Image 1 (cartoon, rainbow, N blue to C red):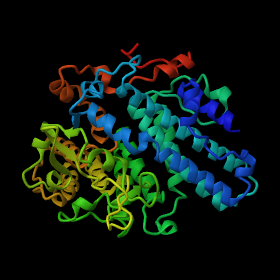
Image 2: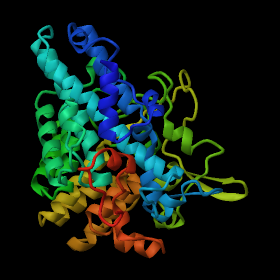
Image 3: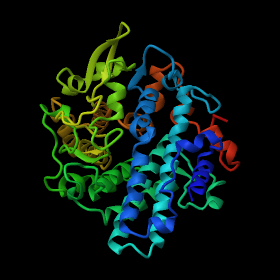
Image 4: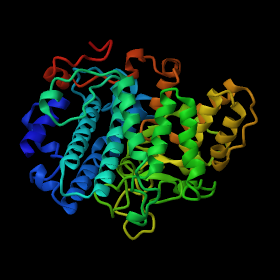
Length: 463
């Protein structure tokens, strides 16, 4: 069972070297699938293992932020040239540099996660031992996570193979599917999950790691925004903002520095902390906030904050590194085991501010610009920035773009994805980076994946 699972993942990802075998765990334990899904305890253990392996991958815990922040206009890497290709957007599929290895790792990690959740879905469906209610909840969790993995894949690489099975005869030579087909599957998965997921966090007290119906609606709102379905984006965002009662509340200007603390009122979905659930620190905190970090925010981002914007002071730390000024991303502040310190942080996947900005943008597109401006102002005022008084739709749209930049810099690919989906990537990055080429808006597929699958075609202009 384990060997088959590993071979399947390797074929999907395009990895054939034996050295990779120890890097990608099987989606379940050494037990056969029939044993895994023969009891509630082992089935839940399999779900827990799939979740921890996927969310604890380097991609989910770090690369989605670092790779995209360097490729966009959020961040640069000082003191050495390890990630020069990401900063300059000169990555090529045949390169063996650290930058391209990181790009390739995202493909591998996300497809490994998809395989795990496909395996869970298949095991749950055929199990005769699990209760119907448990099957429904496990299926909903697996579909949400599969949808999340595919959301990142389609936004990192565009057209990708849609894999919904663990059958190697169907997956090993799968061609790319269109981004629209991938999005259709994401919407199907999230809609089905949303309708049966819980509406509170009571099953795991003191955390917001439970996947709820609100998380499904929040991610659906983002997907509808990305696909130009404005009314549906507004509808799903409104469910979270208006339909959840007092479950989600925006932080105050004074407490904005705490929005990445575990189970805070703005968090819709968080993942477990780095290494284990009790450490209370994140890989991003370890990478960005340590005294030796070499990541620094770009000056144009720093200079774009209004003078009274507390995000500049609360979410950025100004230091020096080897004599060079270093403006560190400082959203996550804990860099070592925080258990017992009173400040426990958690990777934050979905949060309330995004829902206001999604609804704001959707309402502008629906010719209700002033309503959109008012939603945006909720986020601005919470950050200490004066409320906008604009009434022009085009001006408000640009203000929303800037608000997204200030709110979500160095955070799970937001800026990189926003620049591309709004059609502004060539204008913005072309003016900033002399080496910018339009092909770089999507990353190249790993060459190992293409070598292993003759039906997989490299992204345009990388061939």
